[in-house]
Length: 365
Image (cartoon, rainbow, N blue to C red; front, side):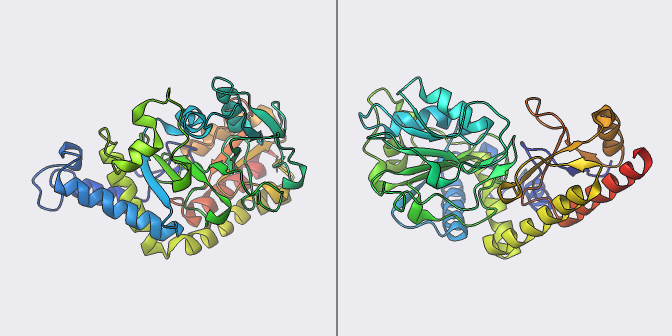
């Protein structure tokens, strides 16, 4: 069976070149006589893998020296607890900007550890825009401000990181869940204190979480924070305090090398802009499909869309799968369809989707 165009929101498609390289190296990595998944995480072979992965990630995202790169586990949902356990520093409040389904989860998880303050947004949808930074209303003494810069489920995205200094809070670190658009565009580290993301959307397989944290934030952890999740401990042990997700780190490293061969983040961002424009322009012009997100906040990575006649939803999904277009069903909380256009999705896949959508509307319109 030939490979499909996989529009899954995560675990998501990986570059075919990466999968082929991993297959070729499965039984014997570079003459080691063993698979990466069989290696000691403290041996010289895996040490070279993780060190190269960190170096490549730093280069791709221009990560400054005063930020630590941590390879952790638990995914972004676990980070919703790990972040307050590490950053509250004895304070009782953190500010949350709610822009979609994932920040609702983040806000509710934070209630276990502090009294989160709703700085902007609402805990109920629909979520069709990002709250503009001038509308943020901070609490008196927040430990940090939390955002999700790309909402995978709702398809809304920040155009850039909020500038807390310009909003009068230069002393407060900005924390961003960047899971579903990391490495799709540059990140402004001058505005960030911490960025994290689960790998399974745009980096690699499930099981790995990337955490990039500024060094002045390492001394704030609660005594209740498990040692394996304490940023300071993980940083001090170079992500080797416990056994890291070795194979997922290896695959992520191959993805980083693939991205460099594509021309880096600037080149992949240009490709992502072109892919998103191709899909959204057709949806807007079609008269048959619609996207409800305000155009200036539409995600380049996750594009939800709806058939105006929703009685055709099942037929659309069945026929799309027969045409080699997979994982297009929207999240159960939103409905409709969703196409995730991560870095590994070439523009040819998006063109194939648009061609199918045109033909489907011709036959059913």
